Structures are given as C-alpha cells and as structure tokens.
Amino acid sequence: MDGIFNIDKPSAMTSYGVVAVVKRLSGDRRVGHAGTLDPAATGVLPVCLGQATRVVEYLASASKTYRADIELGVATDTYDASGQVTFRGDPSSIDLDALRSSLVPFRGAIRQTPPMFSALKQGGQPLYKLARAGVTVERRSRAVTVHRLELITWQPPVVTLEVECSKGTYIRSLAHDLGQALGCGAHLKSLVRTRCGIFDINDAVSLLKLEEAFRLGDWQRYLYPVDSVLRDLPALVITDAAIPDLKNGKMMSIAGGEGLSGTQKCARAYSQDGRFLGILSYAPDSGLWHPEKVFIS
Image (cartoon, rainbow, N blue to C red; front, top):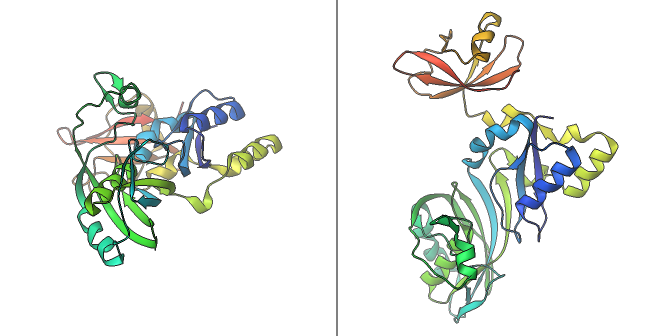
C-alpha cells in the first residue's frame, strides 16, 4: 500500500483529521499529508501512504494554487473569518482600478510575516498557543514567491483572487496585508486549494468516496504511484547487476549519468524493466551517484 491519495479536504476538519481517517481505512500507520490546510479551508490535500511518506518533502516544496475570497473592511486577529474583529474600515471607495494597483507589490519575490495564529514555533512553542494565551511576539518576515496573482471577481466587499505561490506562503497574511495596503482592513473569508504540485482539485476524491472505495475494495484506482510526484527529476536506468549496490547504499557510476551531473543534483532510478528503485544524488567530488532513498526491499 505505497502511494498517494489526492484528497479533497472538507471544511471544519484538520489536515491531521484527514490523515486519521486514511489510517483507519487503510490500516496502515505510515500515513502523512503534504502541506497543511487550515481547518476552514478546503481542497487538495495529498496524503501519502507507506513508502510514499518518504517523498513528502518533494510534495511540500511544490508550488500551490489557491482560490481565495477576501472580505474588505474587516480585519481579524487570525487574519481569517474565525478570529475576533480587530479593525473595521470603509471599503466603499475602492474600485477595480484600486484593487488591481494594490495587487502589484504582492507579485513575485516578496517578504511576508506569518500570522500569530499559525503552527510555526518560537522558543519551542507553537505561535497559536501563545496567541490564545493573549501573548503576541515579534515574528521574522520571510521570503516567499507569488508566481501568479489574478483578480477573478469583485463583488464588494469581497474580492476573489487566484494565487499560485511557493511553499511557506500564508494566504491569510496576504489577505491581511492587502487590507492594510488599501487602508480599510481585510481578512480571508474562505479558501480552496485547487492545485498542489501535480494534483488538481478536479481529480481529487472526497473522503466519502474514498471510504466507499475501501468498502468495495477498489481503492487502488485513487492511489497515485510514489514516483508520480518526482517528474521534475530526470530518470536514470540501473542495470540488473548494479541493483544490489543500490540496495546496499553504495556509490555508483551510471551510464548516461554524466550528462546530468552538471545541472541536476538528484535523479530517479529505474530498473531495466521499468520498476521504480529510488532517488539518487550526485556527488561532484567523486563523479558518482549515491542512493539517497531506496524503494526496494
């Protein structure tokens, strides 16, 4: 049971709650998600089973796309609809031109301060626990990238945006910062993740459908192969004679690998009959490839 489910997370459920359901259905303890969604948010949540939990890092670092409804005129302490109102402003003078202009500084490489109500830790303590205790601490801004930011609709006082962004981007912070830029305050009203790496909302399975598939015994049709999320890595073919070296973690010289070594640090490894074997990393000092993650017993 090694692979990845593209699950459409329902509202009012934590990402860990989705993992707990998949653990119950599959009977496998090795289950983890890639990229936390807030409880109120919905949409694409990749859930990895078995050996696929070892590629979570590749999924977590993939770009993500969101559809965000942002309500102008009201700011909250959580930066979303679940929080306490901290400010009320008047957005009545804001038009489409003002909105379009305000979005320009939020595109590309930007710096963003995480919200207090987040799972980030400071001094070993999650920020949301400090926030609930009424403690506010200084948070360091961090670099994120907004690859695409489009204004979809404007139905005052709610603006709908589509955001394609890098790992670590808080859409709640974007909503809050947009409200500050406009001078009227804002918060994230609702959020749907429509894409995470290769996984799209149109192909996502609901928990109800997944539960039914497990009951009927055809859940495999929703399971993506482990290597499906590694398509950005080049592929190398390992000879049958070299497979024992790969299993034992030995450095290897691979035919055809020389052309990749200058631009690629990692590659997928396959057997001559097409079986996925693992992930290799290139060691420039020796000119050899090292088995970083092995997926065969």
